[in-house]
Length: 337
Image (cartoon, rainbow, N blue to C red):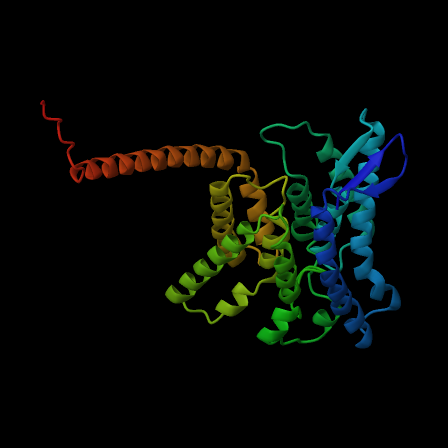
């Protein structure tokens, strides 16, 4: 969601001309509602959590949006420009949706604020880290590697839960607070397909690559977990909403393909042998550091292909002209009287 701030008119309003992030925010709502149901209502009905814990899932995206808005306001207030456009509130919501339900809310708010503020201060350069991906990696380091916070909700921790593949598809699976329902992710992807600024090729190629490598591994080393592996909700969520970030992904057509395939391959190996929940985010972060080089390589490749295509077209035109000359009727010379 793009927030427009104007010092001559000190209030916040949406920029209707740039509605890309607004559309992204709208399609996230069903996922947030389902996350509140799975991690709030169901555990409450099972007497596994208190009333405060019931509203906890809803607090995360609210805090993410609020902190993003606050950071934008601080940057705007200290800038010389009268109007700025930023998408930090959307990033805040997106990051909090993928966190473990037991993450400390106050730590989340503090980390978001300082991460957003410091990363926004970094001057634009060839190696400028992505605001979204880098902040998500900071949370991975804090909650997964240091604090070891579990992604299981209260019911999943206290009870032996066995989910069918249909349950997993609709969202009854272990994962981020609001990022487990593949059904609602596909619904969001269908809506975003018609958004002009959405890079729909990236999630499509990324997921196909991930599925192909998973199938190949299962074919060579049968484990019986093929469907469970490809229905990893973290992979689907990150592919649809993270990898397609307009400011951190390639712009060239060939670059999008290289970027998506690279993430899909790397994601397969990391999720298989390191972290099932965080593998996709690590993969996107690593490949995002190479986006400028991918775009540069893809641009040169496309340029060479265009020259080669032009060469083939000219060669074909010359061939047609030469063949046509064979069938031309020679003009008769006028006989002299």
